[in-house]
Image (cartoon, rainbow, N blue to C red; front, side):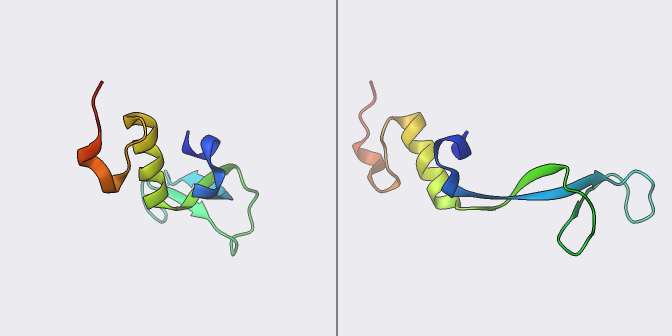
Amino acid sequence: MAYTIDPSIIECSDLNITIEIQGALTRGPVVAGFSWVRSEPNTNVAPEVDSDRLVQLWIERVMGGLTIGNVESYDQP
């Protein structure tokens, strides 16, 4: 939802994602193909997130305007 409200908080990249089930490299983990792997992207992932801004946005939306610096000033309804 944060991306819908403010896309600049999250940097997205198109990657080819597969699940390793053969056991050749690993068994069960997600394997992401980055630029050095020549495969067609099949999903959009968010490798970079501005965590401070994401937390602040979440607090503002859930707590109705509360900021991290003034927790004690929040008046509950």
